[in-house]
Length: 203
Image (tube, rainbow, N blue to C red; front, side):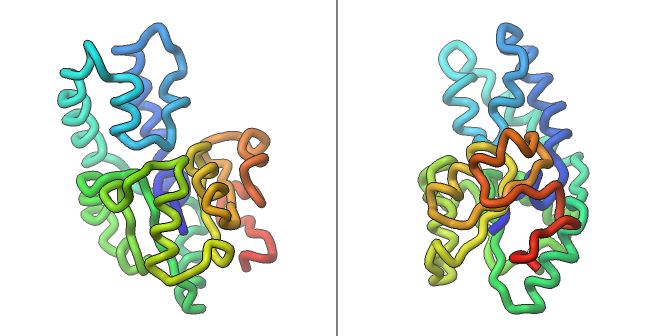
């Protein structure tokens, strides 16, 4: 099971630019806020940082975000396509489990029409009741395959995502595409920089 940003696509640097601009505009008193909200759903970000007097700005930010995502580059993390293609040849079930919404996924499908052929299931924020770090999203994905959590492997990069995989009692592979390997290693069974450097149990 794969998160999307920072795991399938190397998009986190682009999001850091977007959210850096918004956070500096609305929360100049919290430098680096864009790094602390990584892995959160839009609703979580709004509830925590853009409520109260800023609630009316949510619609403005959403429009900006939709426009930004429609222009984003969706470059695969090195080695990902080869890795997941090998999983597919071996009949291993694959799923995307992302906090992104359907509006964002439209941009993905438009720019990467082959994307849906890489996965058996694609779960977005509309498909689960509780967002990461709750295990709900990964448990729901496992249930679609009729799989026990212990037989599943989660690929994540954000702290909330890693905690979600841990809470679901699944094997957790952390990608150091977004955060330092040392910082995420306590939440992972193994840390990899990309899919060109896989441990033996994933080959």
